[in-house]
Image (spheres, rainbow, N blue to C red):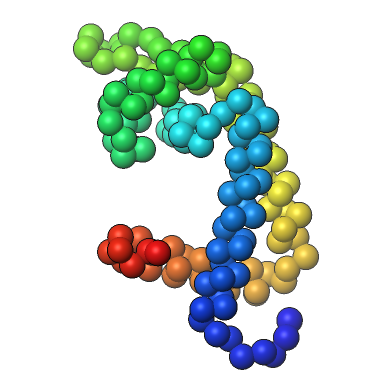
Length: 151
């Protein structure tokens, strides 16, 4: 580390660079699996929450039910999810990961753990704690700013 003065605009530039590098890596990993970010978001919701109705998925992702239907169609065709009749609501469809979908998400989770260890493994715990708090702070600020301020 250097003792150079911290300039907020320069920090934003560094954050932008890191965000692009991370996004590029994620996009490559998803493309290797034939997934878009939107499809991966559906799979991640199911991985975290377990079986869900299409309406629950729609709400969690903040997209229209029609959008979810298209995403689920593609994921079902790919063998990653299956739809079943809801056990207590005849009007609802329950969506769950298939064994193949669950195995892929588990592998992706392990791969992300290894990537995090590679990135942060040699950073002292005290610095990681500060970094974690800073990321929370920045994330909170971005979530509470009006949309026109996020440019």
